[in-house]
Figure (cartoon, protein in one colour):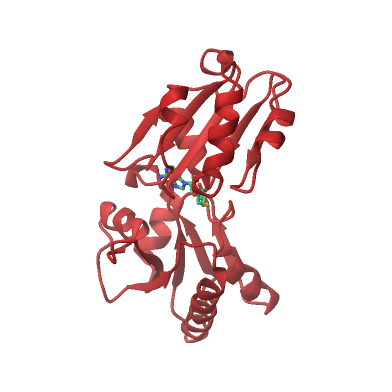
Amino acid sequence: MTYPIQFVSLGPGDPELITLKGLKALRDADCIFCPETLNRNGEVRSRAADILSGVGIIDESVIRRFRLGMSKQRAEAFTAYERVYEQALSLHLEGHKVCIVAEGDAGFYSSIHYVYDKLKAQGIPVLHIPGIPAFIAAGACAGLHVASGEQQLTVLPGTTTAEELGRLLGQENAVVIMKLSQCTDEVHRFIRLHPEHTYHYFENVGTPDEVYLNDSNQIASIRFPYFSLLIIGKSTISHA
Ligand code: SAH
């Protein structure tokens, strides 16, 4: 008997934000591939492992950690993903129940999708269990109506520029910027040029280090860490 390899979305940080379906798959698994990173201080961190531990999954014989770099140099990450692919595939072929976890939703700016696509291309059964993306949890944490009525919402990666933001926010629309640390200067510049918008800044949503700021001067003067995002809209964004 073989089981599909399940890509389980963990939500953004709060263990209670994992779905029942995801939790069931994890509790049933023989093997869970879980990413970890080395931070600038040389410490190994795994937000995914913290979430697993928060739902009582701590068995080191089940959890297989793999190391990822958080930098934009993805070559190193793809070597790690190749290894996950090979190990997950052989465990699957031996009849094990394999899960691969990702923070937020596993299909939303999640590079682990590379492994999903590669397995699928080889005809291996895969299943993506959806989860709550960080920006949705962020909106809830500040009580925002992130998009309303006929408003359009654009989600941007950290490659955006002040000019692009100006175009997108010209109407009554809203923008979410992910991977904020990659476009700090452009975002600071845009905020200084456009005090008329409302800025909601979030860091480490769903963890004990959660930060929420809506003072634009303050947001325009801080360095953004990796786990941060920004929601920009008209002032009605929080009340519509
Ligand atoms: N799959 C994730 C997104 C991964 S891309 C999801 O569904 O949300 C990584 C980016 O997501 C980070 O740079 C940051 O912008 C955002 N992010 C992920 N978790 C976060 C958190 N807990 N708090 C704030 N931003 C977060």
